[in-house]
Image: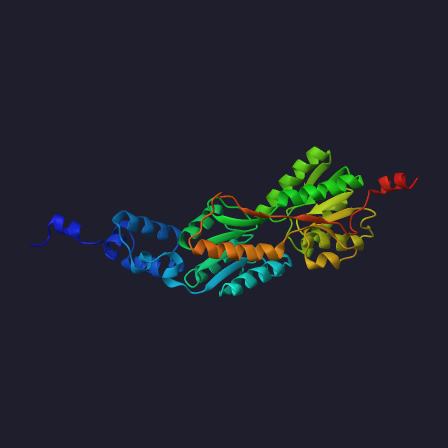
Length: 346
């Protein structure tokens, strides 16, 4: 006899049951399990919750995580491939991937959260894990993605998602201490993109250091983290000069130096300049740039190694970002303010 309630209860749930509870087509459920990158975050979440509620397990769900369809490919998404800060990160990430037997796909989001989403939708179904570097997506979007595919964030901290970052606070503290020791009592921070987590951390650390060291701190920007952004920053600085500037990154600092040189202003005679990241261009600009050195290669390699560990089932015990050390590299773009030099010369 058909149609009994008990008999129906004995049958395992099907893909059609999941589709009914989630309010989607059965083909969407199939696609969510087989090719998750082709389904929106919200739809995938509803399907996953429906499957859990019904106790449904597809063949791919029945296997353990990433091993179900291992491709030996990972994705690295960066904000701007023209920014030299990413060169060493990419090298470190690629070396770690190669050592582990993986191929790495590189995506350039061009500082756009929309392009970043599009790249991830294309990559989701073909990769075993994703590293996001300086992601411009919202925290909630990143967390939703991490539920679908092993994910690690580099240069940013997101709650409930593994991350690897530079010690921004220590780096900015060292920059402020260095300028204070030279005799500067005020400085201007040239800020980076509004959506940048690192920019917020660097600005906060600089303000706190300024309060402790009795250095007046002002902020200008936001600017694009490029040479052109640095030129724009220089024009704004000229309206309200300070004896020293600290830039969000080296590109901003180098663009700033080049522009004020055109205006007949000298570095460090008229203004001291500090960058951040210690990219290869820092030594090539005239004068060579004082900057906070980030461990760029180590950031890339650590990010990939930790991602692969997550894909294998590892979980962070502390839930805190992995923080890599930063140090100040003093070159020729910083000196005592003109008035202090005159006093010292007497």
